[in-house]
Length: 276
Image (cartoon, rainbow, N blue to C red; front, top):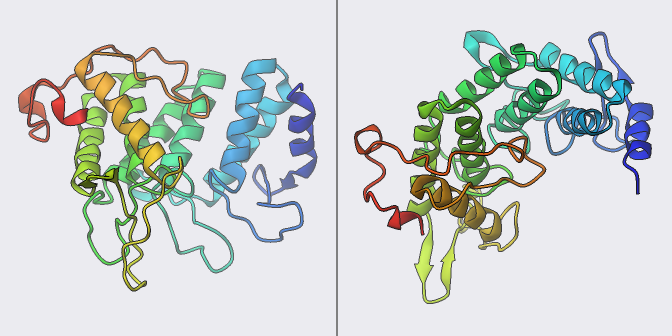
């Protein structure tokens, strides 16, 4: 099946805005959840990927207009970049993960840089990254923050993003932050005769520890893949390829991204055994 018909259907569903255009989470849904998993950021990412694959300019134009809309509603003070979770009741709620936060926005900006070659998109990527690193995660600063370990809304997705940024830019600070997040993931693991698993936390529930999940976006499969990628990169035993849905999938990451021992106290063993 050719992807262009699906892309043209997305063009038909776009909603014009004073700046750019946006998309509903569902065609019959009046509200908007603008981030990667449910809204404009993810659709713009898809269209940018489609434009790169097909060379069709209407997809590129729509992707850029989607990004223009997001920037028109984003909080950008202090060198940050974040877009609210949803309208109407969630416009004061800002997330940090892949699905609905600045990590996902950063992935869109990387894809737009890859599509256009315009370094301004790398600047916006840096703003999205700074929003995450400046937030205080992965520390649990207060009830409800930072309680998710998974790919979708939590630490695994954040770590993958910063591993990818290091592969893209060579900036050691991105790798250091990824390692700090990965160490926290290991600290939160439950290890017993059944294997290793993680419980996301909902502080308003009783008990607050949610059942451990096995899937990709919310469970051990996705978290384990992030740890494996980190192991390959940090020990020099592989290239740590990302899934095609990440903008780093085509990047040949260094076979050895090992940190100097003095640069990251979090790496307690030089042979990388802690990442196995």
